[in-house]
Image (cartoon, rainbow, N blue to C red):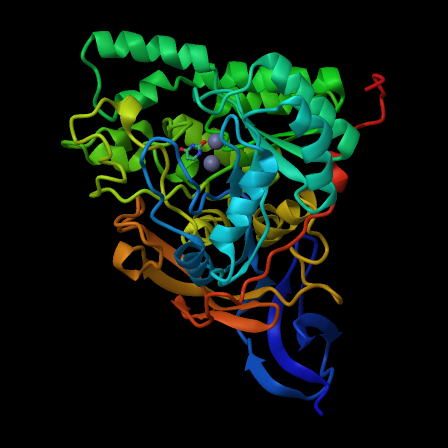
Length: 476
Ligand code: DUC
Ligand code: ZN
Ligand code: ZN
């Protein structure tokens, strides 16, 4: 028997910490050797001229999430994770969402049914907590965190999802006691409702006005509030999908005061602006997401926050709705007010290539930061490290080989999701994943699927070290 199942030779290995040329020996899905000429293998992959990086972890995406309003997500675990694999991602973390009145455990069980036997790459679950009853707080959440669901998202907006401040405090206190990571969707619901009413009274209902209703001031206020409530409880918190300088300033301020406040941003806040919602007819609906993309100055602020470490995580927030579909963006017809357009844009497959091309190739961030933002930090923050998110002996052989010189143009027809558009149509990119392995098995080659649905395994997440409080006990 040869020493390895697979040997990746001569590649430039890049982790969040280092870059060096070495061979990687893989056996039984794990990395078992790193070095020069470590031994013979059944299969040898020549990575000369390629960059060898950990497979991406997309820690914020929505797949087959049941919704209360009749809209249906285009991607399930099959098409969504196939698309992820083709873009160089080997782990996804979508959301098991609780409906108000539903038990959290029922939401998790339902989500297991939806994912069972379908995924092309590995996956874990965050939960969405919308109804933090005593039973949820005292029984369900502690047990679920222990069982491997150690992160959950809460919302400060959307009528059917949002928590009031007292509920947020209860959830944060629970997270502190039990060691969970809380993710916050930070927008002020009343500000948005007020602005929406004003705009609708003036007949301003086209998709573009979504961006005006979801003001950056509403995002800033909610970000500050989430940080303050977390400080009161003394527990870390992660602000998701941050769109611009107003919220960034709050996060930077908190970090400067020594608080464990983490931040996430997404490709849409680097590549799109509110003008992308201002298109002929209803086409702007394609770019309706919350928070909305802002303006070029906001894009610059988001880049700076990626460069300087204000953000730890770069996710897609893939929320897939078909455009030309009565269960998608046109749920309420083309003359619907912006308030009735399903929120979200697709991005699982393009997330890594966009940050690689616009960030690494254009020298806004270096390759080690790229790895940190897209794989290592999410693994640490959500309790998957070091099994996932790095190239090290003992880690799963989740590896993406990149050709840093390859040129391509984004075309929806070449993507593998089930959405009928990409907001990045025509974008020219340099650098692309040419081979992706998940636990040592090839799941995509040259941007095409090479694995199979059902290969992906469910991952139990440990209590994340970054979720630990600073130890300044407030007696909770
Ligand atoms: N906003 C969210 O909070 N989630 C999904 C998509 C979106 O636009
Ligand atoms: Zn959100
Ligand atoms: Zn989201």
